[in-house]
Image (cartoon, rainbow, N blue to C red; front, side):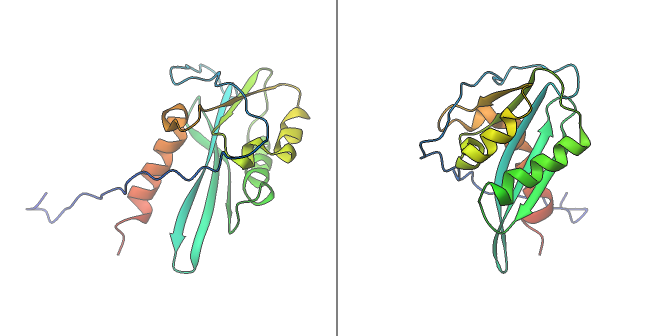
Length: 160
């Protein structure tokens, strides 16, 4: 690498950013990290990450189909409310993929996912089973966390 003038990109240390200190609905982790998906729209995973800019933070919310690891919905916002994060990403996701019977929607326990507003949206479909990571366990949402780590390492950090 030195002879070619190449250097590796370094990632930053993981920092817990989920606000799970709330009184909203918390559901069991039924997805589990060993879950295998053989068809589209059987399991979607979602997460929110912070991205620092010169003008402050923006928040990227993604929804990924576990089957092909494709981002099917996303939202970039300047605030952390359910309206600014989850609802925009959700609307895009349902336009891009059909919701199949028995879809598992997995997330962390963040207030945006547990809020009554988002609970009502998911309940309106009547085909969706919810799943949430265990408290303080980033490994339960490793697919989404891994995507954010790659995105930040390759496109955000270390670009001068």
